[in-house]
Length: 263
Image (tube, helix red, strand yellow):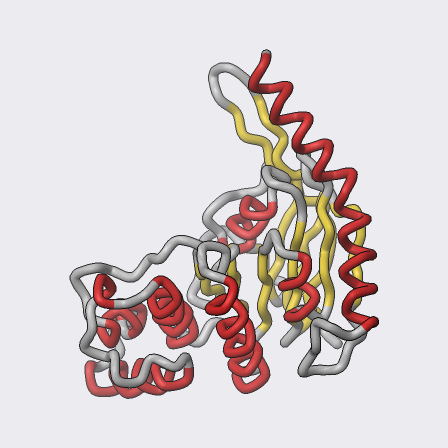
């Protein structure tokens, strides 16, 4: 299958007056069309930084990122980003939030509302079109943010721990809903998470990163039929394998954090 995205020898260094921090170091991997790829790693390993570089919000210090053989130089409508924080505009209704990107692009009101309503229904928010964000639960707000991203019809959906702040039950429901949308819309998804369980349940492949500076430690193809069941021996074995790969890196990250606190 052809690649939609190529990350080639990408490193990112942050420089301040006091010190330099190498966030990610010499990252190389490809992403296929319509692939669901998850990235896991210890806190501070550069997962979100990598996602922001793919989104065009940060520029690599070295290396390059290409989408469909074109170098990414900044943000673009072909890449949509869903954050962990709830990012709906508080003064807009659900309908106007989901239609916001279409409005910016100059899509006529009737057409953009039709598109927005389709994705509101798809994400399970039908009946809440006129509600404001403060009237919604966290899970419902995140549904709205996902619908807003999908309404813009990006080729790649980038998701930075979108379910991390949700309770377990809501998180499980949204994982299931996200997979249904992915299968229907045929999008490429790059999903950052701290949860090994979530990564296995959702993904075609899982990238495991090292402690900072983040490098690729392993890439694990998930060869399980969908829909997946978490209680099968095969699922549990994948979880054991990835957890063991991560274990040393989480410890390194923990020791690094404690050292920096005491210096």
